[in-house]
Length: 169
Image 1: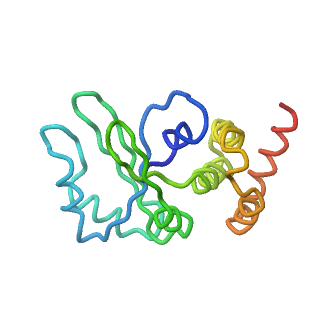
Image 2: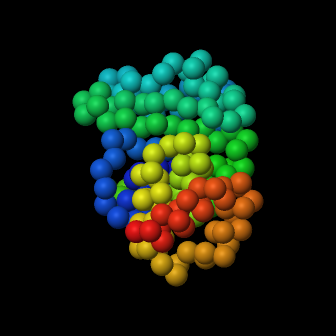
């Protein structure tokens, strides 16, 4: 499923992003099947043994795919046993994008994931994305349920920062 900056743009406001973030899940023995989607004439994709190793991690498996003609990059994050990523995959939606139906993370996942990145020390940009998404999505987001998830996933410090910054402008 698509997540990260592209999903934040879909659910929030336009901004620049340098890549596309994707969350995926496949067992290590299916690494060859994954590579088959990226012909070597058009893409750089790590070898199957690297993908298998990343897919075998409980958490934080990652690899990048590069489109050779455009230098466009996809960062692929593997769900492993991460309960937030697994939930996002289970609740993904499909939207029409560039003439295709593509899976995209639900907005609640995008918000929680961006809060996680911010809490881990990533840029304030993640909070800007969350604020924009909350503003654009308005009442379509169940704030009470989101706040329960913030507590359940241990993201209260990032949420509190979001709320503080939101009050200050």
